[in-house]
Image (tube, rainbow, N blue to C red; front, side, top):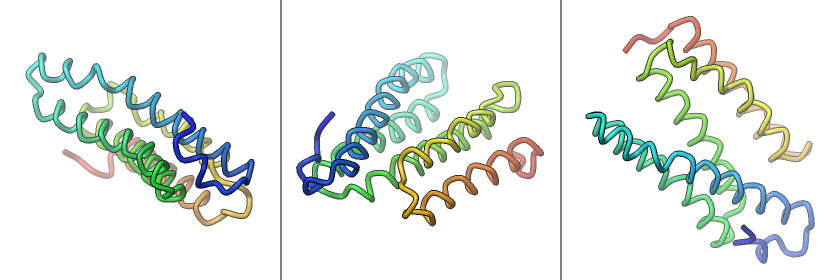
Length: 142
């Protein structure tokens, strides 16, 4: 999971962020991979294709780190992760309680971003809060 560490230019904290981003991206990619087949076999081909797209974006975060796009990789990972939870919570309904994933997801920016990256950290925490409120109080109906 050390792809892209050489672009951190010897900064130990930045190297750890690269490894963390790669590890999370790999974990999310591997855990969502079976759902492509599950959705496809259950007749939800659209959900399967959507899962494939999200899965490819998760794995692209690792590739972005390898190219040296460390910040873009972190933004891509967090935005896709939150967007995926939002879309699936919206499509699969309240009974799944997927909107509750935003509570744990809101903690991730505190780990992935340093205190000096306050804007990025705040953006993802606020985005998670807003997404949760929209889903919990059914401000969007599909």
